[in-house]
Image (cartoon, rainbow, N blue to C red; front, side, top):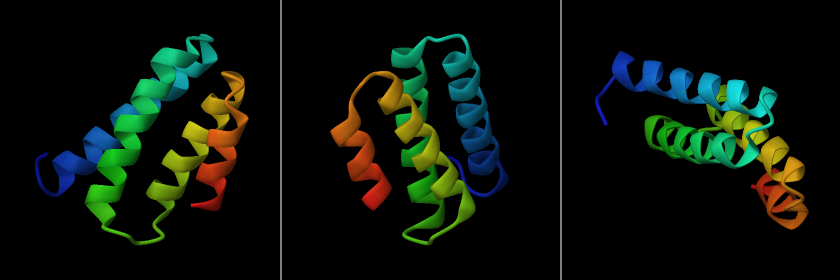
Length: 79
């Protein structure tokens, strides 16, 4: 990853792409973007309870629910 603004732009792009794929009901593809966004967010904010980390967790949880992977979604909510 790059540092600074490039990381933030990447995070936003991944989250936006995940949202678009979710709205298109391409949940598996959305989940891939959600996972990558969460990885970037955690690396960018290193353990902070930052809104971008929480947003990524929420997006991933919603997508997991659409895929009927409820236990994994619940685990994320507890994170």
